[in-house]
Amino acid sequence: MSWMKKSALLASITSVALVGAACGNNEEGGAAEGGDALSGKVVMDGSSTVFPIMEAVAEEYSAEQPEVEVTVGVSGTGGGFKRFVTGETDFSNASREIKEEEAAEAEKNGVEFTQLSVALDGLSLVVNPANDWAQDITIEELNKMWTDTSIKTWKDVRSDWPDEEISFFAPGKDSGTFDFFNEAVLDDTDIREDAQLSEDDNVLVTGVAGTEGAIGFFGYAYYIENQDTLRAMAVEGVEPTPETINDLSYPLSREIYTYVNNASLKDKEQVADFARFMNENAGALAEEVGYVGMEQARYDENMKMIDEIAGE
Image (cartoon, rainbow, N blue to C red):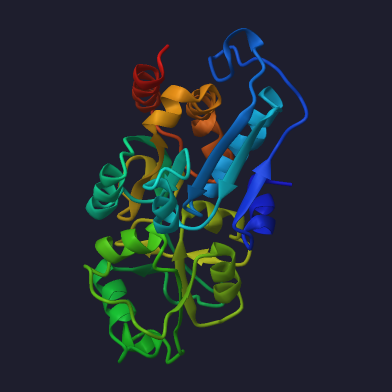
């Protein structure tokens, strides 16, 4: 079963504790030096977009350190930051950068943190496979259809498209993917009130796949996992692919992140060990679940920050 299939089974719950059954040593520095057994907890919450990567990392890590309990929550980027800025979690997964007000709340609570880039994603606009007319769409058209409630049918978007009613499916407002779309496409204009919102990307997949005139959006990995029941549109003439996401030619390419609590990184050996393991393996596991790994230099930058805070 693929990582994405497993994450689909878990998307309706708030978190999953991943505990393994084998122990080993990661020669690349991901596990404790010399194969030392660690114990304790690593608590992580946040983005549903980043969740498949971190689920995969946590399961791999449990084979290295079975006594460390890694809990991966999926309450959305905003929901994850609400816990993180009070010191409740060690990591906060995010499909956008932390907001000024969230960072201010963290400072108020004495929470210092470090942003680690995990992988690249291309926010994908998807339609029902029965839609054979909307092959490409512009940012201007997306803005109009997602904000103007007078747009009822595809013909209202382009005159040569059919008079087929549009149903709209989007991530909930606690989602970093929603925030990214709001900034990149909606230009901070309110999304139309009749859009069906959900923090669960699998609900969006089901909605678009089951409604002929539907349109929705979410991370590239969810499109790849469901491309047998969905079709992705090109945006401004560029299709989302690993190549166009990596070179940023796809207009809705973006970095996805995890934020780590510096105190946890410094004071909890299992958190520092997990951070190193995650950084060593995130690129390959991101590719496995449908995202795009970054250049090695970016992961080297991450490791330098981890080592400076945790101590080598």
